[in-house]
Length: 176
Image (cartoon, rainbow, N blue to C red; front, side, top):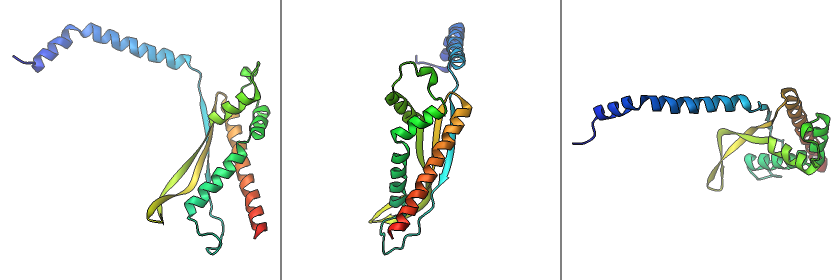
C-alpha cells in the first residue's frame, strides 16, 4: 500500500519511449527556432560620471540626486526626435522597413532599442534618514541586426551624451 520508489522506476521504464519522444520534439523545436530567428547584436558603452566641483554652500543635495537629475536631463536631450532621426538616416537604420514607415515609428523603434542603465555603487549616502546608493557610471546600449551599424550608433549616442554634458558644464560655469 502506498507509492514506492520502485513503482516510479517501473512507470518511467514502461513509458521510456514517450519521455524520449517528448524530449526530442521539444529539443528540435528549440533548435529550429534558434536557427530561424535573426541574430540581434548589442553594443554597450560605459560612461563614468564625474562629480562637478560645486561648493557645498551653493548646492545641498546628495551626489546621487544630482547625478541622476543630470543624467535624466541629458538623456532627454539626446533621445530627442531630431537626434534619433538624424542617427537613423546616417546609418540607414530600419531601411528594410522604410517602405511606408513613418518617422514616428522609427523614433519609437530606436527608443525601444536604446537602453540607459545606471551602475550602482556599494557606497551609500545618508539622506534624511534613508540610505541612497551612488551612481558612479551608467551603461548606454543599442541593439539591432547589423553589428557594424549597432557599434556605430552606440558610439554616436555616447559622443552626443558626452558633448551635451560638456555643453551643460560650460553653461553652468558661465552662470556662476
